[in-house]
Image (cartoon, rainbow, N blue to C red; front, top):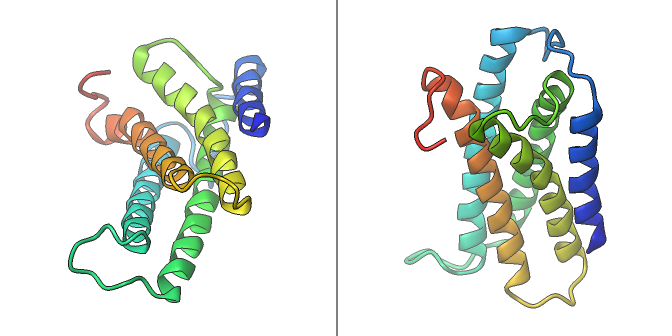
Amino acid sequence: MLLPVAVTAGLYWFGRTHIPDYHSSLFGQRGYGARGLKARLGSALLCLALIQLLLALWMYGVLPAVRTASHRVHTTHRVIGLTAFLLSLPIAWHCITAYGVRLTSTRVAVHSLTGCFLYGAFVAKVIVVRHRGWPGWALPLAGGVLVTAIALIWYAAAFWYLNGFQVPGL
């Protein structure tokens, strides 16, 4: 379980030591255009994460009045998870190269630190999925941590942008 910690620490180190390039682009968008694109992509990512949560609840039989999840539900869960991961990469790459890991305000610190933690949490979830010796609560916990991290990152950045550069509580 040191690999998730190493991923999180490595991203933090890179983000703190890398010289930010505020003019870098994301799919040809720079500045406010890039922020708007990341807010939309981040919102799509949050939607995928929430779908993942619903599919996981279905697979675990937690949803009332829903029949047992078929093999298609499991496959869909994996495909959406991979899609969400791939969607997150350009967003994260732009964030860490354009801005780095900054701790200048509570909102920025929450976004930066949770962004680093997200990929360590993803590695932890993959480890739990691949190694069957974990207790039954480990996989739902790992998945729940991922959804929570994505929601927190979205709240501290995409919602902030879409809400006129204001976010309650941060």
